Image (cartoon, rainbow, N blue to C red; front, top):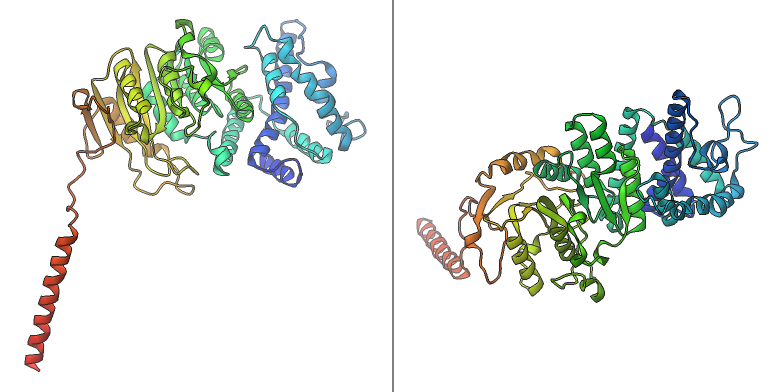
Length: 485
């Protein structure tokens, strides 16, 4: 049912002149879905209060609650088309009253940024309604109203489908690709870092919050379900920062659908923070991230870092090292050229990483891991506090060309996770000793010494000599055949 509903909504948005792409589709679906979720949440809390003989204080004023503006219903339980807004009246209400009212929560709840009220304000400060036809919007509201997600099973199904939409958005083109890291890779990174209840997990380039959502699932499945743990995993475990408006909204919605009521996701430019101002209270136990790469950061942003570079990913890596607690673990996706670039910033950053952290594992990912991105990537696994002694490399080979029809799956990652805990040496894995690293370049390139020997390539001189010998041999055969004839 959920899947068909999303498809119907996409079909409506395709017809609307205000929504141009998959990015718009998920953004517009998100704000409507959020308000429907909020209504369900308020109903649940009102029911709980009634059972205790208490009165529930609604977050939204009556005029702005879902049953009043979106879906006023008659006694038969169906939408009352005499009172329901539609056409230009609906768009006018949404743009002129609803969004400004909801955006104002950011000021009203400024003292409590962790609250659902503050999240309402942030989301509706960042998003605009792009649905231009009030008739299309009326249809979308009716489809969303049919969704039910009050049980865990329903929420799980809905969150899974929302993830699928994010993935499709990533497949749709360059703009969406930055939001989507393959979930099998994320899950493998989480298994290696193994976050525990009581620890704080952080992603400073959160995108659609795939790392935080998967870490939530991982920890929730394994923890003891008592009041203390449930409160901790809801409120004090997952933290993220995201710069872009749409990604911030999608990430917030994704975390909510996974079961985190008021996500600790901040809409900010992480690189705008001076790493010299980071104190112990700001640090995290586990960092999981796939920071954007290839950007050219401005000079004033670079001043926030000790190693100056315009490469976005290299600034993020400095941020992650600084904000990680001593003893903390990190798994960071980065372009494989980081391991071998010869510019001063790259060499300095590799030196800094090796000296301040134990870079214990480098996972080399095959081409095609990231759909729509032609770059090769590696994952750096490190623990802060002690210098690197040995680096275990693993070269992933999926046994096929990865792509849209053959994406990465969990089975592809199983051998890596198994061998990583043992640091086993195989044809695909090997160990580089820190003592063998060139101290002039700190080159960490992926060079597998265990690859089976292949026949060496011949020189042009050898090839020409063989061709000449074959010509002589052929001439001799033809000559002897002539004599026979």
